[in-house]
Length: 304
Image (cartoon, rainbow, N blue to C red; front, side, top):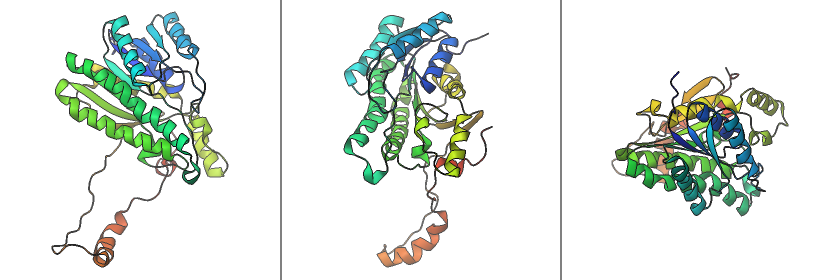
């Protein structure tokens, strides 16, 4: 059987647990040599342990795969560069980067501290930039490469108490599109995945009301391993021609997300005033305004 990542080298950040772990395992099974990056922190970003990455490398080796551990911090540009260089020095090249690492520090917006904001932005947005930038020059030189970045419906649609996370994940969408545009000439592709899966991070979702409890039960039915095939596909040559897109994965369902485009317009040859905006623009736009919703309000059916 042909393996879609045969002789490829893939760096997966946050690969020690959850979705990242499943991606690393499947990538190795599909023939890739994997750089397993994981800082080994808790769900709120505290603590560090190199054993998290090392244990997965042992598991991959026991299954007949090839991997090397990396416990670098993606928020440090120098360490991000080191993990890319590790792939090149150990395996001779790097073909794909999967930006998956992250943690949550949820708090309602008006109670969120600067540290809670900055720490989440730093890993989910700055960290993804660091790793992507570290790989960019090599991809440019060899005229090929793939980026897979993890975004979230918390940003694409909305969620309570996640201003930091949602902002970072929407930033990831902008980062991915910019990479896709700027590096298209070098045959470098960049795409996003918004995953639906139960993990250490989603375990923090509150379940105080009947609606919230139902949402959590739905999430529990969606395992992290269901996300891995899409990530591995996008990291492989099988996805040739796919770039600048946002995908969603929910159990056995795959979604392609729309991206912001104008949906209504009004014109005034004499310009606008506050009064004319209220009297002309508002009646035209009002029925097209996007509602305040969370992902559970949009994805109302049970996972398939």
